Length: 401
Ligand SMILES: Cc1ncc(COP(=O)(O)O)c(C=O)c1O
Image 1 (tube, rainbow, N blue to C red):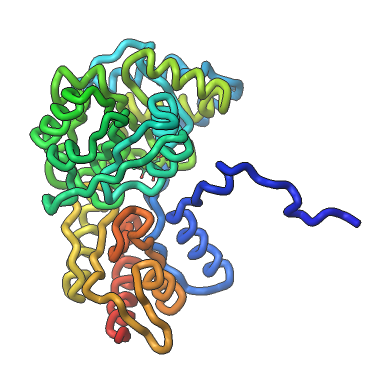
Image 2 (image 1 turned 90 degrees about the horizontal axis):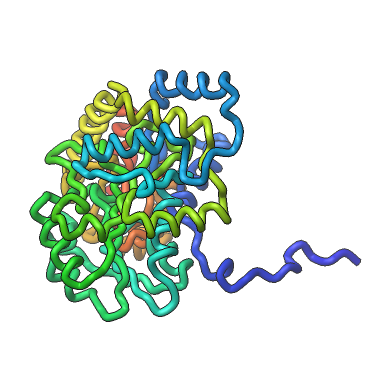
């Protein structure tokens, strides 16, 4: 008699970790589409544009040159150089070569940074709303995520809230500016206030700056450059996924104190070896040449943001206009709890499921982002699709009781 297919027990860690809910809603939308349903997805966390042609050509050149073998764990020299030049040029941050690590996406860089900085008994502060993966990454490292509520100042953590979240066990703060899912962008002054608290209390900042190039109003600043005290206390993380529409190429990077970067590299060497070699060559090209497509995509996102925010406001749904990223948080608390036909809709999660099922619009509910009663809508999709999705959402809202 063969054993059942689920006979193998899983480790406690594997059982505890929650799957990414953004991926879950995107997958659900894709499954309905495969069944022939007409679904518009505002759930995905990636640009809808193709990777710039010049970057694709750089990858072709790398493949033609036979660059298909393992790369050094820390990344190919030309990409490490391009990263250093980019950080100096865009962020006024000077790093030596040993302060830079190339990773398989920014996601790996954040996970490695958390793992080398925090472990059992430690705490890592995560301002809410947050990117869904941060708390899970902290838990996977054996540490405890401490969720700090942001104020009414455009979804941003302020120095007082940070100070309240501190404890003798705090090891790090994960700061995400521009922020997924709120689109919040911290000013230089706001960063300085946070930086002072971090430096005074001796904690490290993991600064995830992956949306740096998608800023509409204001200007991106890295907290690492906000005060000289924080330069040695920050791990800066960035990558190519969002800026250059390169999500599938899986290239991210980290820069920071060399002993932290070395520890991250050692961990990576035992887990993944290097990031994809020919992707790295293309990423070096993108960073060195900043293709004009970046500005074109930014202008398109801005027009789409205005379209979506205007449509939401017309249907009485408030959202604060995001100054950056391609997401906005739509506040549906005034609609909840609701009912549609015989179905009760107590929360944003149910709202999103019903919206997908009955209106063919995929969005991500706010709960896993630490934003209950809200929906995350991505405007990384065409204006035509946004117009139809907003009409469907408005019709769905009108049917609620
Ligand atoms: C805030 C944030 N950081 C990191 C990532 C991961 O980026 P990458 O594709 O480089 O792993 C994402 C992707 O959605 C993100 O939203």
